[in-house]
Image 1 (cartoon, one colour):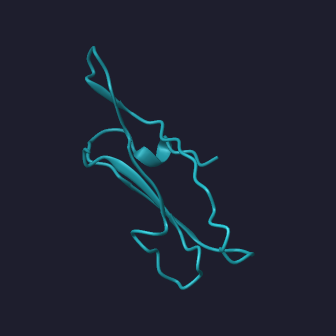
Image 2 (cartoon, helix red, strand yellow):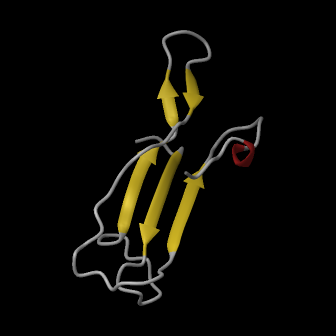
Image 3 (tube, rainbow, N blue to C red):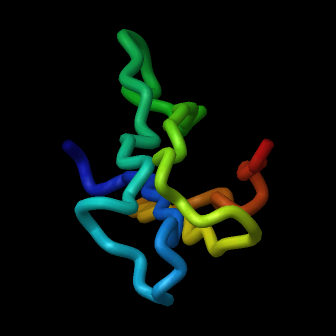
Length: 82
């Protein structure tokens, strides 16, 4: 996988730690290869996940990180969370 990625974690057990194994719900490339120049474009990233049945009910925290290794337009100007 390339270094241009999006990752997300949900603190299901509400211990204040985003477990890299059990609580990561997204790891995806933000690069979309193209057959003509430019050779790639960025995004979109889309995924789904199941909330474990034993997760506590109520509010919890989500961490979303995008690693973006390029110059030019800011990724923040392109990002939407639906």
